[in-house]
Image 1 (cartoon, rainbow, N blue to C red):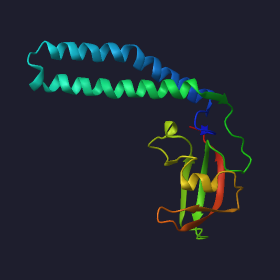
Image 2 (image 1 turned 60 degrees about the horizontal axis):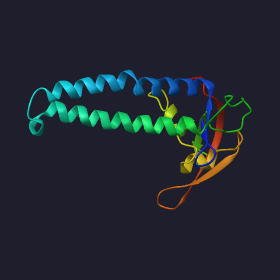
Image 3 (image 1 turned 90 degrees about the vertical axis):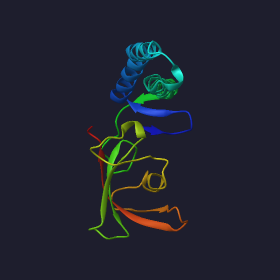
Length: 165
């Protein structure tokens, strides 16, 4: 998945379907469940000192925020193919880099939106300094990106292959 402008996000069909399924769940069954929790907590009495009520309302707020995020993302999504194995770094690829030419000091990460983030692999956004620096580079090329302190860091692209999920 990649964001090519502020409003367009490219998704594979698989990612689109997964996000749409999450939205349908949050908009339907999950809303019913949270409404039932709130109603049950209301019946317990004084709402000012009712921890269950406040927790349920907070959960509802987080859930509604996620519904809005997913709705906006899917409204502006473009569905396409996963990147080809071309040796060129692009969103949706697993990238291995070496820092400052040191082949032993490496980092492997997924270049993708946070929607793809998982516990299996570290994820860097294409809009991050590192993501911007490596995007479009070929295996074997050097890339530079700006560190938070304003200095430039150099990395070498060792590998770039499509993410298999």
